[in-house]
Every structure is written in structure tokens, then in C-alpha cells.
Length: 211
Image 1 (cartoon, one colour):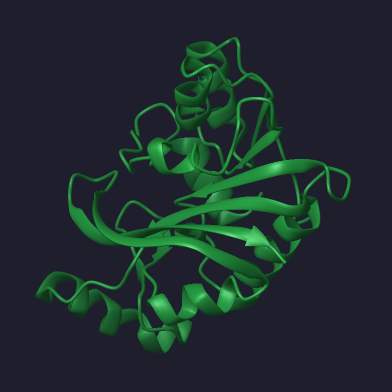
Image 2: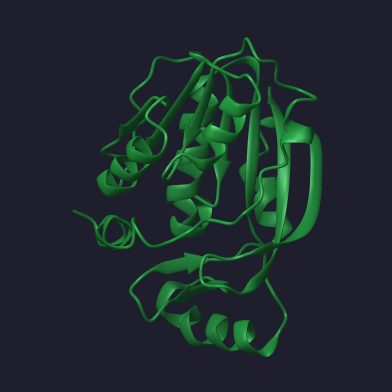
């Protein structure tokens, strides 16, 4: 089991993920009959929000079994599954839309993020929709200190460790646009999110269409 997987299994029953889902933006491009996948779904909160709005063709995957277990207890009506490995266990062009919220932040290496976005693109139908939301670089002293502290260790400004064991990353907009180069941008908005540990962070949400 990877260290990050161990961490998310350990905190699965205590962490709340407050990163907001812009459902009003989402429904501008995704209809209720479409097949939707939430990658890194955690305990299924986003899919449950969609379910409550009448969406039914919903699947969620996460590599932390304890997150899936929690989600199935909370939302037994959802289709949530554990995923193992870097390849996503679905056929090419199987989904109309893929959701990725707060997942890049815990997959800190460029090559890992690039592989994930490439896999998501493979799963999407032609002109399929990507909804991506995550955290951006902050300029306050607390964050600047920890970015600088861990830059030499990880080789990336924006990566940091939490005392409780997680390794996380905040991103530049330029990096996000590079990751999504194989999508047509439909929407991009910078915002501020609450974090799972009760702080605030710069963030963004992005919607793109598969090229």
C-alpha cells in the first residue's frame, strides 16, 4: 500500500472535504442522461449532490477502501468502487463526463498528474466533458514558508507535507493549462476554497471538452 493510500484510509472517517462543486456551471454542459465518473470520489459527496438533482448514471472510484466504505454507509444508493493502480478500470470512451475534485493536490508529481489526465481523456467520449477543481499557489507567509521548506525535497514549489502524514501540492494556473492542453477550455474561474483542515486556499474550477 502506498503511503498516500495509507493516509487517506487512516483519516477516511474523520475528514470532511468542503471544496465546493459548481453544479450550476456543471449543468450548463452535462445533462441528466449522461454517464458520469467521479475519479477520487472520496466518500461520494459530489455524486450524492448530483443524485439529489436527478442524475442517476453515476460511478465513483477511489483508491482508499475506507473512503469507499464510508460513502456506501452514507449513500447506499451510489455506485462507489475501490480502484487499484494507475490505470482506470474502464473502457475507452465510456463516459460523457469525468469529475476530478481535489485529486491533483494529493498526486504531487508532474508525471503522475499527466498520466491521470491522459487516462481521463481516454475514458471520455469524443467531446466529453472534464470538470476539474483544485488548489492554487498561495502568497501568505504560512504557505510561502512551507513551499520553500519542501522545494528541494520534491523539486516543485508548491508541494508541502502535513504533520499528520499527507504530501500535498498547490499549483500555478500555467501548470493547469498545460495539463489540460488536450481539452478545449469551456470555463475557468479562480476562487477561494476551504480546506479539510479548516484553512482557506486559492483554488480554481475548470471545465473542458475533449479534443
